[in-house]
Length: 211
Image (cartoon, rainbow, N blue to C red; front, side, top):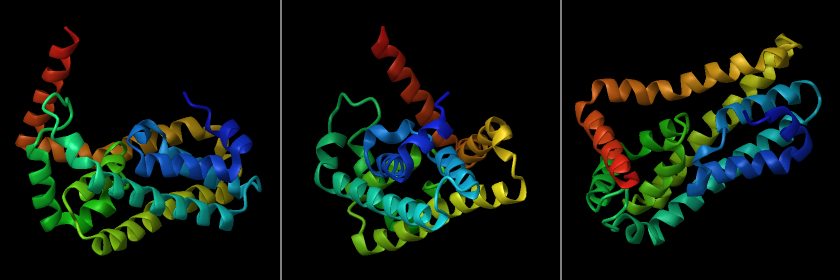
């Protein structure tokens, strides 16, 4: 498991901000542990390793800029990527679906996606591909960054103040955060039959390519 405490102590604000930015805006950043990173950073701030105000500024700024970069990638390069027939993850119809989706649910999608691992990395790109108006995207981006980047850091900070030895229970806390993060996606899959079928089809395509 990625050792968050040593990493944060060694890399400081630059390391935390860099990972938040990468997970929010760069396609390869989807595997970074954003939720647990923010929570642990807040916990360490409560112990004096980081200044909480600087940390909040860095994480908020990185989250906003990261999503904006993801949006720019989707708007400029997205259609070329999404139109590739061989793509495992995307089909040409995804562009049309993204456009229709953001016309109806755009603002909510940008905000709520912040709390779903993997999804939060790709949603800004989809928004750019779907040609969502940037002004509308930016407002949702800022709100989502406040709730996620600021909110999760504050949760770790306040828990650390209430329970000074909370870092000794960091592993079960992080596991709980990860499960909680994936819960909305699991509920959606449980309720939406078409989403379940898409997931099964995607898995079959991946398996067929490995043969």
